[in-house]
Length: 233
Figure: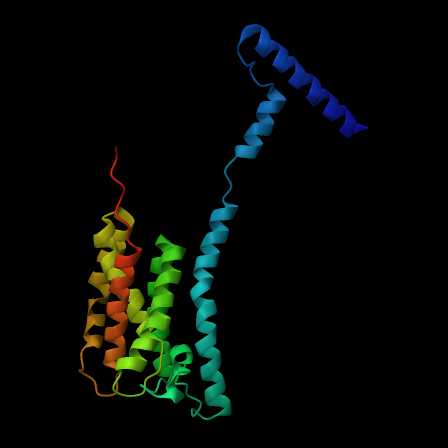
């Protein structure tokens, strides 16, 4: 009965509003109850922002759960012998295009990649989740294909993807010339410029070419993602 009364009252208010509008040519002011309902509907909520922030914080962690699970199983069950590298220009190495990023030579190797991956992932996610997925995908698949086609020896690890994220961050701010992306690019350049040494053949046990492929792919990812602002007419 209460629901019926409310509908009847709303219907009467709407009819009165329409009649007043026809007679005066102006829509009457909302009733207090209607205004309150409108305010309730339009009241901003922080739940959406907090959920997005939580999702952005957790996303790289969920991705890292894959290589960490692989490494734990590798060390506990296979004594460090379960590796999934890319073998260049070999049919046996094709699977490594998809798996090598999640395989590491030990926990030290994995931890070093984890730190850079988290920092660079969160910086990109602070700007755009779309940009993050595009850049990550280019580094993951593009880096694997480049290492398979051009790499001199077998390689595995997440560092190629890390360098792709790094390359994107270095360039995107200077392309967009907006405050937040530019601040991020400057922050990365100032604090992580030493990372660039990783693309040079300075350490014999480091697959520097994978880093170089990743950096180049990251730069191209930024150029491809960037869109020229439309000219105002």
